[in-house]
Length: 371
Image (cartoon, rainbow, N blue to C red; front, side, top):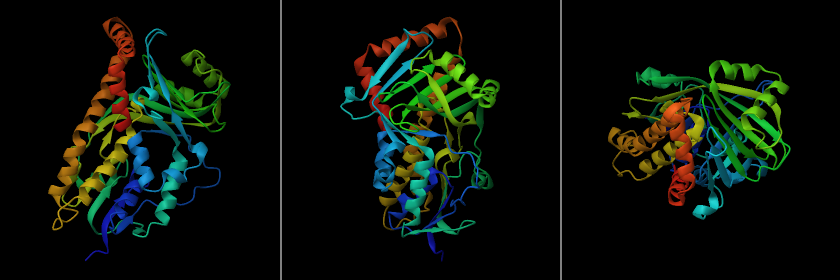
């Protein structure tokens, strides 16, 4: 008989949240993802996550949210989305739905460090090197999951020919909790209000660009990069200064052909990939964690946690939300990829129309907050 109920494979935020959440059900959890301390001189993690209310609530339940440093999580109170012209824009506000914030921008490294610390003190979690026998294998190893491949589960990937470019920026004017996003052809640029390196005047950058342009900007000197930012944003957020390194990764759309089977389940990027233009990648993964925990907690007393029918309940609950987000991001990307003609007119008129329909705006805001 195995010493563990669950084995969680993966080292990222979704895997760690899964190990913590399942251990809170009283399950004995083996976790394979503990990382060795980074080598001296390793590049700092410049990524920021945009987390919705549901993700923040899960992290609060796991006793992780309040352990984050105050300047490692910044509330987004307003968002401005702009199309090809200044007149084509929509503004979204938390007050319109009676909320304190639309989302939170969180330091990726700090979040993962807080999760790792919580796991060290979790009484039902044991770190293992190579995995362990367990009634349920939770596979959260990311897009290139080796365990998924060993199971023979196919995950066809639709590459976009784009890369996401991340960086930290310092502005010469306060951000005021306002997130800005530009949808154009051929790029999507997001400035996420942040409090590092300077409280109230910093941004996390997520810039989706064609491969060649992204690689050129990643390698450009700071002055050239800042000039490209100024041209792309039109100075809307003030003068932007690059702080630290830049990171990039390939963008794709993918959905695993199966997300569960007898004794195994896929979570996060191991199960689905979406374009980052909506900032929902980690939110989808944390929603996977929350739903799996709900299904296991509500199972019949006689049903084992690796029972395929039980895991199919999880799969059914997550199928529509993940597919819908994939369709939404893919559709928006293709709509804004066209440089002229009817598509340009449609998207710009659509943004303006949304801005003049408060009920629709409120519905979109609530959907994003609860995704």
